[in-house]
Amino acid sequence: MAKLTKSLASWTRLAVSATVAASLFAFSIQPSFAQQRSVPIVRDAEIEALVREYARPILKAAGLANSGIEIVLVNESSFNAFVAGRRIFINTGALMAAETPNEIIGVLAHEAGHIAGGHQERLRDQLARAQTMAIVAGLLGVGASLAGAGAKSPALAQAGAGIAMGGGEFARRGLMSYQRTEEATADRSALTYLERTGQSPVGMLKTFERFQSALALSGAQVDPYRISHPTPRDRIANLEALAQKSPYFDKVDAPGLQQRHDMMRAKIAVYTQGQSAAQRLFRKERTSLAAQYGDAQATFVYGNPRSALSKTDALLAEQPKNPYFHELRGDVLMKANRPAEAAKAYATAVSLDPEKSGMLMIGYGQALLAVGTPDAVDKAVTQLRKGLDRDPENSAAYRYLAQAYGQKGDIAEAELATADGYYYAGNYSEAKVLAARAQQKFKRGSPGWVRAQDIINHQTGKKKKG
Image (cartoon, rainbow, N blue to C red):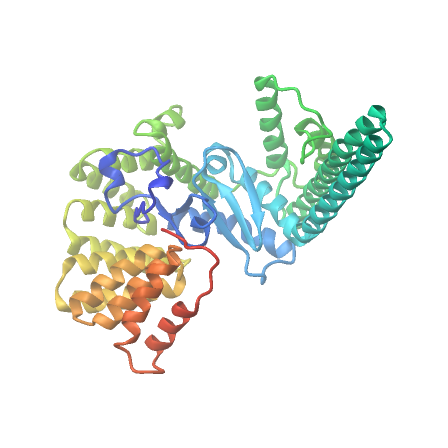
């Protein structure tokens, strides 16, 4: 699985021990673009590949297959997903809580509906309109208050204050109404995409039932006119009849896909809820592959490498071509300070990976770097470069690349890689310093010189720190 590089102190919400937090393994919390927005991003090759697989047919049905849509995992325990630009963000809490792939596919279909419907652009227009309405109401209210004061009429002055406050509330309610309409539209679009792809709408209904149950348990009194989404009860009522008309209503997820989903849930449970979380999650299925996977992950994170290796080898006996079992084996061997064997495990993971994940290539490069021989370091540079070609915003990988170039004695490339690492971590001021230093060592006009100039020329309003 992916390497852990918990680089931000503010992003330490993963429930792992201090020993694990200091290691190089587990989920990777990456800075990059999301750091600048204080979104705790989780990186994991296995989970990303599975969620992309869920999304691929949905995006095609929505006409978004070639639109560069990214799926981003957020380290948050709540059941939630949202859209920003061309990115769909989905919480690890949603992935772990969803008992079937179909539930997450329904969530992705809803978010795809927002993107395909251009809801973000229209929401910006509505926000501008609401702001204008609030300003106009405020000016009218101020005018009435002044008139009341000039006429020595307290009632008129009070009315003016009421206009100002009421106008703002009216604008806000109008905006909330607009958002509820867009949410309902995205729900209906999601049903269309699910039917086009031959998938059941039951997962969507289960999600809204979960929300309704949580709302009922909270005892909260909700004003339906002051929320941005329709109530779960309304959403179920609006969709249930349409959903039941789907010819795929009773269709269930393929067993192999369900198994991968369960293994994903087990992994997330271990890294976010502690050593026994996967056991609790699969207490009724203790012999399942997902339960065994969770046990191996927990042993790796909280136990000793020898036991973790034995459990990982048992998994490989079940599925010898599973790239993520080989990745876990590499992680265990790295923890056991056996980098040469780890490199072989990562190499196998890379060769078996149908997604060609940059993260697995970076893990392979990291192990080669730890081997430390000149030949291994040369190979490390190649693998790290390949990984960064696939995953250019992986700020941690640039540190390993800088180390590799440093061991080779190529100081210019080492400094440029360090500058890139700072750049993608959002620390632009430090990135510019390192880029300027590196640029002096490159021939003018060379690729390294040009990349350094790009970093130096980057414009930012505020200093970003990683």
